[in-house]
Image (cartoon, helix red, strand yellow):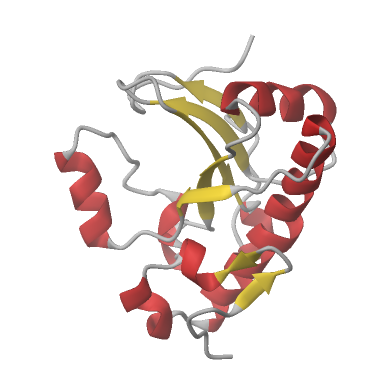
Length: 173
């Protein structure tokens, strides 16, 4: 199925929120499936959970979705430490199975992360990471489970925290 600008991947998320505008026409069927899975089975349940926690509608703002090599290179130049095998690449052949970074404007990001970590184990994700940059900005990274797309299940490093622009990752305490 060919993707187009404005196309809904789930009730509350469109392709434009996750895929760079100049890349939408290059998405293959495997990437499309990864995009739909992360929206339907990960982001939608998190949005519902966040809305229950906030006791009002709590939209999720995607800050990073599918990355191109140029976007990866730009992150390096700006002082970030993205993984060379980041799930943001959405390329199962390279072991990258789809990821997004997001925030909400209603619930503090670190509170939402710990609430998901403590209370909502039914979301089937590959990883969930609370990240912070040097400007003290937080976001949550979530990824698809690799085993859904032919990869090996993650046994370690599923739930992590990085408070130094992605230089180090630790398990939450």
